[in-house]
Length: 283
Image (cartoon, rainbow, N blue to C red):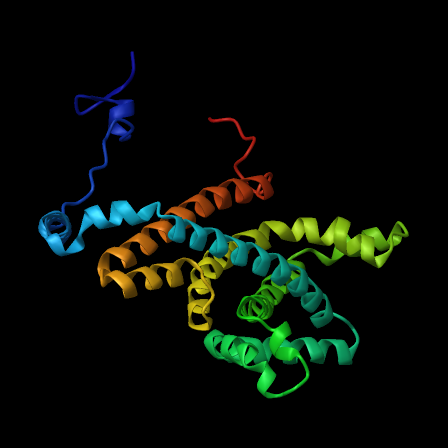
């Protein structure tokens, strides 16, 4: 027979069967009421306001011109990120180099491209022919090339710092052990250090990819027929500004959602073995 304490069993006396209930907060309840009310008001406005013109949104969401803009936006995003990653890795290695010249050159590049607005950089590349008149630069630097140059070079500066942080996060002993085995520096970087740094590099790089997708909207000022520019061309002709902006916004939301799902699985892949509780049996 278990011992009794004031009519309770030992387990009950020790509090094992007690249920912890969160303290009710009137401010929390009030906040929930306000949020629900605002959400209901938003839904009511979206449904009842005819100026949103949802029929127009549905008609243009799959329009050929809009779809072509989506494809060009995806193309710019992919190419700029690939170029930015390659150049960013090179810059990160230069920043960590023992060569003062290489390190300073990389630092200067990162300082300049992170310190000036992307819009200015895009317009600068678009007007590069003004610096070299009569040299054929104008034919070479088309609006598309100017957009790709601006996005890639700007992104490389941010990715360089992300990669550098990931490389610094790898224990120095990994490099020393590989050197003791006679492995070359290039193979150490690509085969030992960089794979371990990916767990740190991937999340911010995925965020930069989403940011890049949205930054492509800036190339519309150069006349590049991206998603936003395609929507602008249509509403400049039909004067249906709000519905076309909604179309563009919905496409951006769809693409960023897909990118978010991909980010989840990539992070899960590179994060294997990093959970301190993984592999432990439940008590």
